[in-house]
Picture 1 (cartoon, rainbow, N blue to C red):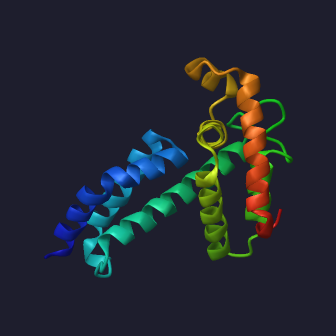
Picture 2: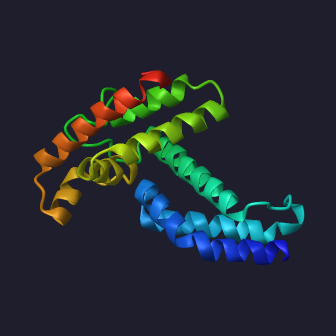
Length: 179
């Protein structure tokens, strides 16, 4: 089977699960755009690509890289003052953003940063569903507590408490990564 056909078949097979995984981390729209861009670039550059032994594994690695790129983009936007750092002081140095930035800052090279981000994703996945939801919505997608509260009907104070608990758990899980 030709590389293009294998890539297209792998995309059809893995698309739904990759989008679900990636969507939880960076938001559905960003996930769809990122996965589409990865596959489009791969199809456009098939001649220069090494033969793919395991298309599914390659697509999952590309999805992880897209999530890392989204995190970096968000950090650059935040540094430029383009996003809301969060409510009730949770986006500051003691909150979620400070935790992540500290862990990434202490990583000495790209491989270490990627390992740190993978540990972060695993720690986020291990959170209780309500805590994971607010971390993803507020800290990763950049939504405000007020907008999540309006959409879900959950009081802002409850959302903030869930994020505080989640941040404490993530801090413990990432203790070996510079925090």
